[in-house]
Amino acid sequence: MSKQLREGYTTGSSATAAAMAAIRVLFNGSISQEIEIPLPVKGTLNIPVERVLKDGNQVRGVVIKDGGDDPDATHGHKIHALVKIENADSLRIEVDGGKGIGRVTLPGLPVPVGEAAINPVPRKQIIAGALKELSEIAPDFNGRLKIIIEVPQGEAIAKETMNSRLGILGGISILGTQGIVRPYSHASWKASIAQSLNVARAAGLDEIVFTTGRRSEQLYLAHFPETPQISMVQAADFFKFSMQQAKLKGMRTVRWAIFIGKLVKHAMGFPYTHAKDWAIDFNLLADWCAELGMAEDLIKKNRAAITARHVYEMVPEDSRTAFIRMLVRKAHGNARAFSGNSEVAVEYFLFDFDGQMVYYPDHQKKSSSS
Image (cartoon, rainbow, N blue to C red):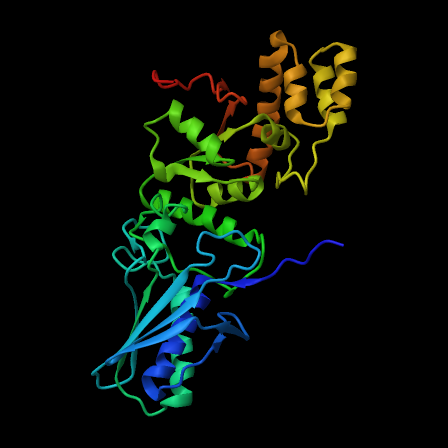
């Protein structure tokens, strides 16, 4: 029986709990080991409080982010909320970012340029948590409650994310549309793809380079170093979704930097290319090789192959180009179909396992440095 993966909570939920714990101490001195926070959609969640520190008229709450069994750059790091009271004629709650919270420098994100990278949903969640706490312990409070979210290690953590490419500088973003982290959810990756396309479009770009991971991205940039960083998007296994988003965002040209395994899956029309969900049909791949006139003994070996790389390496040198072109032609048709047969131009750049670019469009010139 497979182990059930443990859920966690988002940076937005962590910040909400830290703020609520600080408010509780600020108004009645009560320190809680656990805080019940409101979730963005519905329901509540209990989150442990690491510590609360009072300094005059301000209080700092600290929560350790727990991403559950989902790999996350912020997992195990401390999320702070510094809360202080300022004079005002009526109740006002302001949320801002301090140390370790990035600032938005490019348009296209849900947060305006110049503001702290605290997305709208977690911002509303933090305010809702503050209002919930005030309604229980200080219902008559009138004044400005200032909440400053900080992550001491935020600038270092941000280097493990795509924030700088999105124009978020100086730290991490506070994220979370559901408040709960569900392990290996596709939602966050899809949101990242869509957001990256928004940023590129807002910068006036209508050409995008989808990569299947960091290595294919680095190899593409080695050959085309003039490529704008914000046009590089790690689409991973999301073939159909990425093409749909490219059409939706008005992209004119889509390029895929890819290895043979993913190219074969694109050619087979898999909407999502992860191995555990979509396995290569080696009989079909062998049939395609037969259509290219390859020898019968090779076709038989292709049917028994276990990886696309194995098939690729068995293809004779004098048939390699035709083999790759066949796959690209089929992949191109599927890409166009996923984008609604739009006018989006699709190009493929194939890298081998030594990092050499073995296929690129005829019209495309490689960098002389490659």
